[in-house]
Image (cartoon, rainbow, N blue to C red; front, side):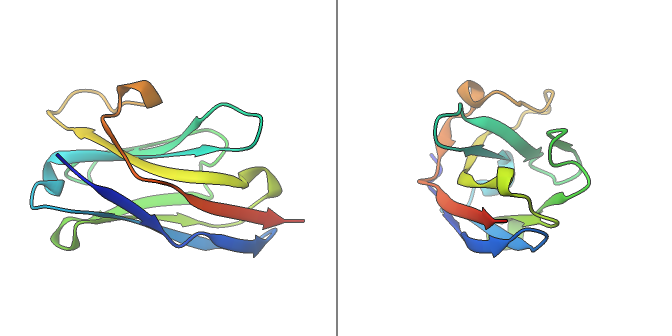
Amino acid sequence: QVQLRESGGGLVQSGGSLRLSCAASGRTFSNYATGWFRQAPGKEREFVTVISASGIRTSYADSVKGRFNVSRDNAKNTVHLQMNSMKPEDTGVYYCATYLDLGSPLRVRSATYNYWGQGTQVTVSS
């Protein structure tokens, strides 16, 4: 199994940037696709982005495409989410999650992910 821990959340002004990190335990991280989800108060958890185990394939929600970038460093068991040009609507708790990547299409539904971190708060002020 994989244990995940998010970090890098905080307060940022509109138009600013934050970089989130998702650190995984163990030696099998390179076999897992890693996604990011977020949840704002009163809203359902929504998909943000996902990156394949190899780092070759990525997918982004339309709401963040062109502003957010996901990358991974398997040697350091870490996935990063670079968030630029942030908006107040980006506010929420951000979670990283994983599933075993066997080469199937990238998953975008939270229910299809097996392991989750505890989340990190991101707040964007106007």
